[in-house]
Length: 240
Image (cartoon, rainbow, N blue to C red; front, side, top):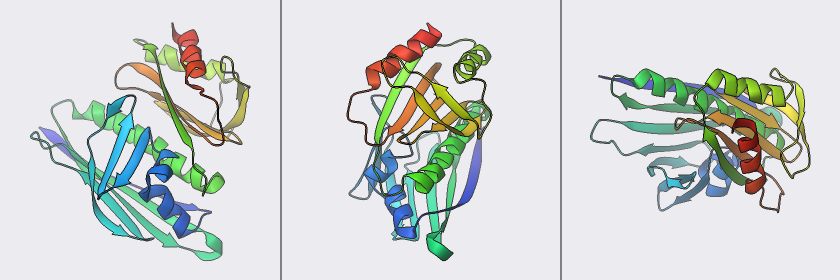
């Protein structure tokens, strides 16, 4: 048993089609909103996240600046994931960007994986929209840190919400990672397993990892110091 899926997402962004193309079809662009480190070369999209190389994705369409698509190979159990981006310019340098994620999840427990995937994709797309609206043309340094193992996820999210002042989407928040300047920003995304905050120079994201840890998956614009130790300490202070 398994499940075929298709998840379309669409938004109007204040960016040009060329800026959207740069964000979705180049390694530095994808680094600035997706996850981990990315490279687009030789017709392949490669992603490294948390010290692991994810399955490579083959480019199936590259029509700048209108359409970009890539897909993973089909595994023996039928699993695959495909991404398609459609870009349409509008008036006054605005653009409609549409991301369609489709594929097949095998196994009897596909619903759990699908729920996590759908939540993650909602956060990634919201981050893309936020990036294009506030940081288009700039390149981020991605940061990934994992907290300790978590068994009580409702309690884990309650701890994080308390640290940020129990915010709702659109609220201003302020929190202080260990050893870093306090972060002040706006909650741009809030999902059952994800949370995103935009500051003047970063996109901060927290997500419930499939491996059972809270993950900090941030995009830092202009930061020069290595912030990974500080975020590692902060996550472990919250959850150890």
